[in-house]
Length: 429
Ligand code: ADP
Image (cartoon, rainbow, N blue to C red; front, side, top):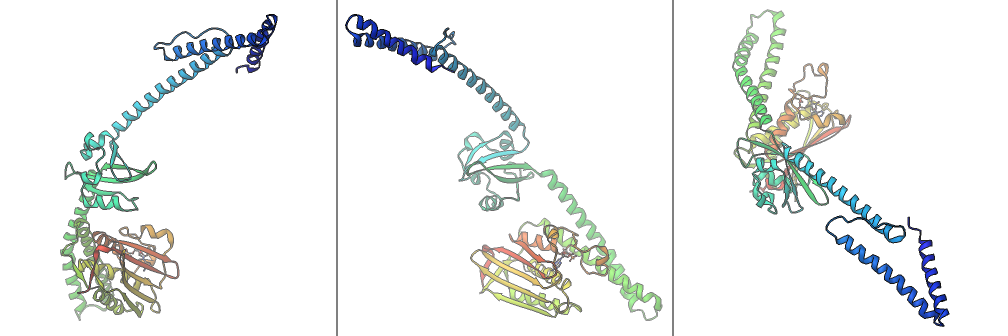
């Protein structure tokens, strides 16, 4: 630390000396003036040296001595060296970071608030075909896949979107936008072709196996029907044959649903889209529920819209029938089922509400997985469900750009709401 006390003391003594010497010559003020001018000239000389030293090309030797100026030089020299050391470290870090991002197998693209490309890594060149000149361009102009464009426009970008690569249509990319900095996003793109191929193999296997199982099952069911109709059948065989018939029916239902699921998974777009008469769809589901021997007796339909839905009638009917049959299965005969259809500016809604047993919160996120069931094996004995119903519902809805919202409370009942985008609504002709 600079001892400012001694600095001021020296200045004071110099002034006093000037005054005293000036007084000897009857000019005390002139003496003071000369002393202060000398002090000023001395400091100016140091300032000049400092300026030269700061602007010198090569590191010059530090001035020796004590006092304020050598200390200022030493301090500046220390700060300058520290800055240089930090700069070197920062450069090294930047180099390492660049090397690391270069070796990343995933593409990373930083986008600004208008989705314009700010910067990207090497993998982005390979996976997305981005070039230096693409900086500043909007990413939607380069990646035009409608699913990707819709994903970027969405508020909720938590779940990644999968698109075919713009470089190679056999390659599949998973794109995930994460908030970055103040109002930027980091688009992370990963090659998921291998996973898609595995999924495809699984789907094909399930579809082929289900298909192959159909014929033998039909034969078995045929013989069982004939046996059941046989009046000469031993009385003690009647019960086992009836049980075999029930289980064969279940197996056929399972095989049919597995086939339907792989069909839904394979086709990306809605086949044969047309205006679906929702009233008729709801009424069919209502009749199905009322036909069940132990289902709820009160099934209401509430329609609060003058619009119909554009979609595939078979898909929509299977969505509503699955939701209604679930509601019927998990609601006692004295319970009630309410099916609603309404639209607003944001979209269309189709809900199936029941006053049944409800579902505990922890099961809700997994409910649409294949074969996921809340009940354990014992409770299910004799049940009609295959565990595929909600998986079919979810896939059929996804194809329509819709999603399923599930609300439920144990012991009170459940509400399953299908939410369709506004583009799917059409006024009733
Ligand atoms: P399942 O054929 O077993 O009904 P789903 O995929 O249709 O299979 O349903 C999965 C699970 O979700 C069911 O096993 C059941 O536990 C639960 N669930 C579905 N709908 C309802 C509902 N309306 N009320 C209570 N639980 C339900």
